[in-house]
Image 1 (cartoon, rainbow, N blue to C red):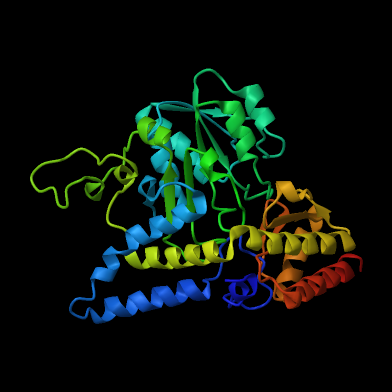
Image 2: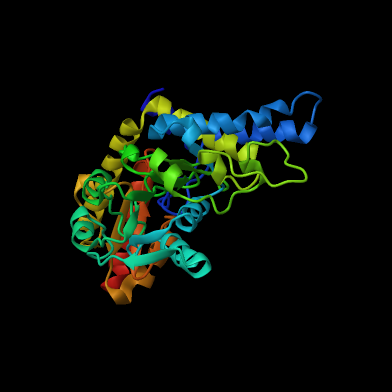
Amino acid sequence: MGIDAFVNGFREEPGYLDYGRFGPLSQVAAEEGNALTHVLERARHGSSGVFAEQDARVREAASALTGFPAEQIVFTPNTTSGLMHAMFGLTGSVLLSPDEFPSVPIAAVRAQEALHTVQPVWLETDHGKVTPGQIRDQIESGVVAVAVSLVDSRTGYLADIEGIRQVIGDRLLIVDAIQGFGVVDAPYQAADVVVTGGQKWCRSGWGTGFMALSERAIDRLTPVFSGYSATEEAEPWGFVPPPAPGAKAFRVTNPDPIAQARFAAAMEELAEVGVPAVNAVVAENVSRIIDLADEFAFAVASSRNEHERAGIVVIEPPEDQVTLLTASLHNHGVTATTRLGQVRLSAHAATGAETFDMLRSAFISFGTVATY
C-alpha cells in the first residue's frame, strides 16, 4: 500500500486538528468493526469462531510494529490499564516527571498508596521535557524503573528512548507510547514496557490498546491484576491456579474481539504502508502549522526540531487572548485542544489544504479582532 491509499482512508471533515485528543475512525477500522458487529448481531451457526481469532491477530499486528514477540504482548482496553499493571507490578522506586499526562503519575501514586511496594521519585524537568541528561543526573540507587511518555501530550516533545536506555542501565523502562504510536518510528525494543491505546493516532476507536513486555519486565513485574483468563486453565472451576507465564498473566478478563479487530486492521494497514512513510507526511504538515503560526506571530511553545517532535504543535497566545483564539478556531470549523493557556494543534498524514486554509482564516479573524 502506498501513502496515497492510506490517506484515502481518512473520512473526517476538513478542519480536524485534534488527533492528540482522539483520531476519527479510519475506514479500515470502521469497516472491520462493522463486519464483526454484523456477525455478532446475526449469531449464525458456526460463525462465532472469528471472535476467538482476534486476540492472536491483534498481538501479531502489534508485534509487526514494535518488534516485540507476539507472545510478549497482551491486549488492553486502554493505555491506563497497561500503566496500572506496570506500576502495581513494581517493587522499588520509579523515576518519573510529575508533569507527565496524569495517568502516569496517578498510577504510580495509587500503587504506592495501595501496596506500599513502589515509591515515586519525582524528576525535575525543563518544562516537562524528559531527557537522558536529566535522568542521569537525578537517578538514585534505589530506582528500579523509569517511566516516560514517548511524546509529551502538553509540549509535543519526542523523548529520546534510546538515550534514556543508555543512561538507566538494566532498570526497567516504561513507555507510554499513545501520543506517538502509529506516526513515530520509535525504537520500541529499547523499552521494557510499551503501553498504548489505539484511539488517537491509530484511529481505531476507544477500547483498544496493548501492553508489550520485555523478558526482563516479565521476570520482574508482579501481575497484580491477573484475572481468570490470565491462567493456563480454560475455566478454573473450584480452584485458583497461578497466573500463566509470560505476558498473558497481565490479562484481567476476556477482551472485546470487535475492538481487537478494529485495532488489528488499523495496525496491519500501518505496517503495509510503513510508519516512516506516514511520519514523513506528518512532519511536513507539522511544519506547515509552525509556518502559519510564525506568519501570524504566535509563540510556538513546542519544539521546532524535527527530531524532537511528532504530530503536535503547541502555540501560546497572550494570556488575555486565549479565549479569543479558541473562539476564532471554533467559528472557522477548526477542531483543536485548549488547555493551560495553550492551544494544541495536531495534524495527521491526511491533513489537507482545506484544513490549512481554515486555520489561516481563523488566525486572520483572530488578528483582526485582537488588534481592533
